[in-house]
Image 1 (cartoon, rainbow, N blue to C red):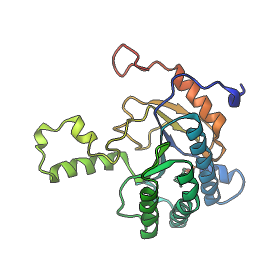
Image 2: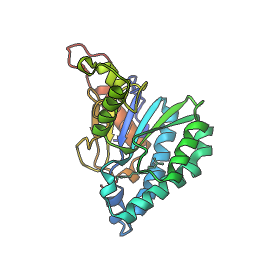
Image 3: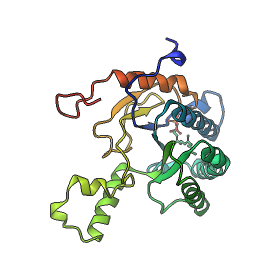
Image 4: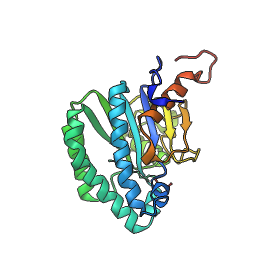
Amino acid sequence: MRTDVLPMPAVLPRHIAIIMDGNGRWARSRRMPRLFGHHAGVEALHRVVDACGRLGIPMLTVYAFSTENWARPQEEVSGLMRLLADSFIRYLDRLIEAGVRIRHLGRTDRLPGDLLARIRDAEASTAGNQRLQLNVALNYGGRAEVVDAVRRLAASGADMTQLTEEQITANLYTAGLPDPDLVIRTGGEVRMSNFLLWQSAYAEYYATDKFWPDFGEPDLRQALATFAGRQRRFGGVVART
Ligand code: FPP
């Protein structure tokens, strides 16, 4: 099927979240080091951000580095940290021009100082942008996020015996953001990997075998078409989209 000419479905997700998997295997299939795959992954992200802006998707969240990824070989971790910091510098002007607002989701404790500075700089200089919000989950874990929210609530003196879902939601890294409607995973695996566990309670999942560096607008359109064909019931009987 020609996916690049698929008409845009009438029902679009307001918030797409992506598990960008397969960079390492993409590189290995080319007999190249894993970091080569991560570099190509940044290019793919740039294309998808661009496509979301044009297609009218207002929010995108990407899983750039999980709390579990620190267990990878030291060389890959430090290379990734450098790549991420460089990417924030390299793409910042283009993001500003394209009306993209950046927000970091995750813990800041183990992040190198220069990367954290780049993130804070990107957040501050894109704060007024409204076309597309790009949330970058970096040093992110879904369980850690809930733990952090509960700790914050406890520290604030909240009555822990009467906690509500709304209180937890309001204290997650994603406070104030809509839940994802669609979670896309590339790279052939079909699991959640500790990504947006709380927020994805009613998200539609879409998995593709394509490695992330090969993912582009035609694949995004295919995911959107699949999403539009799903009937969402949110645990009830009446579809709301
Ligand atoms: C998964 O592939 C990918 C990552 C752990 C890192 C993804 C990061 C990027 C694409 C860069 C994002 C850039 C910015 C600026 C946010 P993998 O290494 O798990 O691949 P494998 O499953 O084939 O080994």
